[in-house]
Image 1 (cartoon, rainbow, N blue to C red):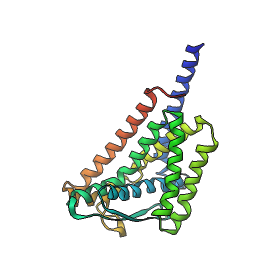
Image 2: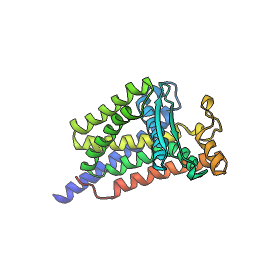
Image 3: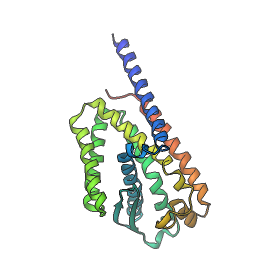
Image 4: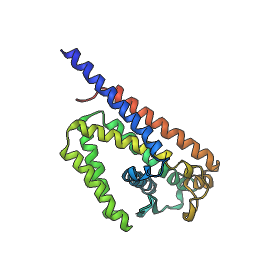
Length: 242
């Protein structure tokens, strides 16, 4: 009987993994069609939040200041921060890199934490809580001030009101969405300009870390895919605490 239950559990894990892979592929496809962005809009806003929080938190880690965060209805965002001069060119380069790498790193955390039901619950609570806290501390755009708390409350609702299995799948689904969001901004990663906002993050990296922007764009694109694959591998090869 125990062996039968183990086989059923393995089959369920394989089915969940298939659905996550299908979700990742479907996400990339939806980005290419006109109405697809509307379907994925909440995940786009969440990915933007991860991106801009990456900039701001890295500035704090390096001893600088994270002044405010703006998120706009078109899915773009802007982090306002300041660094001291002790880091030279390395500091601004790291802060520039932390934005594009914020979503895949956050996605990796969500996917790997899904291997434990208890950790899934606490991780969803932490994510929802940080979304709410960031609104009070850093978010200063009207759109962001309205939408970010809604996302936080939805995620907290999943943590508090749904079954453990739904929580685990939600963690993995959000994690995959965060990782593949890199490919939503692939044009941005391989662009020198960020439109009216000045230089792109990869152009900033070129400015401070010398190698060309397209090199950094390619490196982060490959890194995001590697992080996604490894996170899924860890989540499905380690023993789940069911």
